[in-house]
Every structure is written in C-alpha cells, then in structure tokens.
Image 1: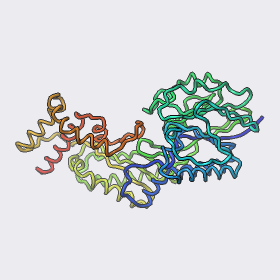
Image 2: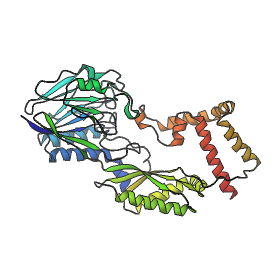
Image 3: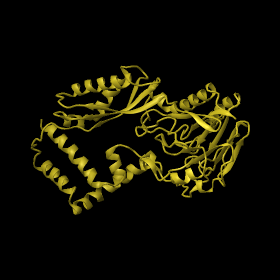
Image 4: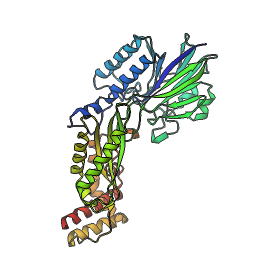
Length: 428
C-alpha cells in the first residue's frame, strides 16, 4: 500500500493590503508589508524539504482581485518551484477569490489543479491511491450547502474533502457554504481539508476535520503562531499530523500593568520591560507585532488618556531599541482606571456640558439631538475607512467600532471620559 504526505493550508490572502501602515517606513514595516509572500515562500520551502506528494489550498489564496499581475506572477513562480520537484498543488477558491471576484488570470503550471465552481470534481492520484473531492466558489456570498453535493468516497483510496465553509459562523466568520460536522463525517472521507476560519483548530479526529487557520497573521485579531498542517498517510491511515509554522510576523497583545505609576515615564519603563519579555519569548525568528494595553488603577490615568500619540511614539522608540526587526507596535490602548474617585471643579460651562453628556447616555431625547449632530461625522468615518464587506476585517479600535456601529451612547461615554480627563488636567 502507498505511503505519502501532504500539506493542508488555507486563507493565505496573498498580498493582502495592510491598513495603518501608510506613511510609515523602516525594516519592521517592510517586513509586515511582505509577510504574506514570505510566509507562502516558507510553505513551499517546507513542501520541498519534506518531499510531500502535494499541497492543498482550501480557499482564499488571494485576498481579492489583483491590483496588478505581480501577485499572480509570484504565485506561478512558487508553483514552478513545486513542479520542478514533482509536487502537485490542488486549489479551491473561496469567498475572497471566487470566480466573480478575480478578473485577471494567468496560465498555471501543469502541476496545479483547480476545483471547478459549477459542480464538485474528484481528482485521482493513482500512484499513491488518493482521491480529492472539492468545489470552489462562483461568487463571494455562497449560502448553499456545497458539501451536500460532494460525491461518495472512492473505494479503497484515501479520500480528502476540500471545502471552504463557515461551518455555522465559527469565530464570527460569515457562514458561507454552511454545513454541520455530522454531514461531513457521514460522507465517509478520511480527511476534511477546510478553510475560511482563521484560527486554526482540529474539529474532529479519525476522520480528521481541520481548519489550519491562516498562513500568516495580518492584524491584531489574528494572534499566535500561524502555519499549515503536515499530514502523513500509510496504508490509508494517518500516522503523522503536525503544525508547520510559516509566519514571519507574530501578532500578540502585550499587557502592561500601570497600577501605582506616579509618572508617564514610569509607565513607559514598564512598557519597555513588557516588550523585552515578549520579544525574548518569541519563537522561530518571528518579528513581534503587538498591541500594548495599559491596565490597572493609577494616578496618571487622565494623563495617559491625553498622551496617546506620545505614548505610542515612546513605545515604538522602545521597540526600536531592541533592533530594527525585533518588534513593531500597532497601537497603545489605555484601559487604566483612576486611582481614586476625585471631584473635579470643571467650571460652570464645562461642568454643564459634562453633566449633559452624562445624562445623554440614558436620555433618549438628548441622544436624538446628539445623533443629528454626530451622524454626518460618523458617516464620513465609515466612508473614509472603506471597510471590507465581511466581518473578519472590521476595525478593532473601540471608538471606531462604536462609530461604525452607530453606537451613540458608547461614543458619548468615550467623549465624556476624555472631557473629564482634559478638564482635570487643565485644572491641575
């Protein structure tokens, strides 16, 4: 009987545009910009080194339509590397790279097979006695249960089902190609190579039902190690199953306890210490890309709220102190609390304004008035951000989220907190 290995990957989002890097430069920023390509190159390196029979890409190879042909040429070049080693590649397109989404195309090498979108197709590999079944997306929003139409397993072969699915809307992802675990198990396949959910997880073993997660984290909601699964098969039984790390940038949240800090400089020192710990614990040579979150009760709560740009610049300076490509700071979030409740003499006008904002969070009439004034600003924010249609790319900042969701009570609450800090600092 045949013995072989293969790699299962998905959600590569090649050349995915990374927001928030406009106008920024330096080795760390450049590494983030090219991270999806380098991670894919690492995957191909692993496939060649481990002499796998084939790789499976279960959807969202591309993030959307190519800006130019360079994205396609890069992919063809990597497939050519596999071809020279006799390694095949099987691609299924998902919601981001559905037929309706991609307008530019290039001829792919002969070692690449693409699952069609009109109906499921089975690709047989007679030399290793394997069969792969799959169906791609014709359009972005697939609400049909594609798995229901997949064929019966090929008798005596190792059967792999390839599917891009939300599987019930896991992790907040859109529930494209909906299905349930029981349906997949009932097919009788030996392995289900899934895609779409970016946080890797093994849903079932024997048979394996697997989301590998994305190949490279692209923002703060995609934290932790990223990669693809290496699967070894002997006599139609899985004998090896392990995660291969391919990421070059690893996203993490670095928590900094600012409790008891008397000065901004003291908080900065704690940020530096936390960054050093996070950098020293990284693995695989990955650069740390992180969000710093300040917590705890402190006398400098108000000062931290009002020093956002300075704190961010200071954190980035501290990161550079560890080397050009040791770490990059995406954002500093101030989640501290005042050390003690203090009465603030805000003056007659500002005091009235502060009180009005406080009442507005519970007063429907006041909210309607403020909504009229804020709606134009909120609308402009939504337009400027040009958010992707799917939820996986939503902005993670609390204030922007409130604006995008038209959560006016939350916006008013944030404004009141900032105003309080501003008035208190001005008084001091």
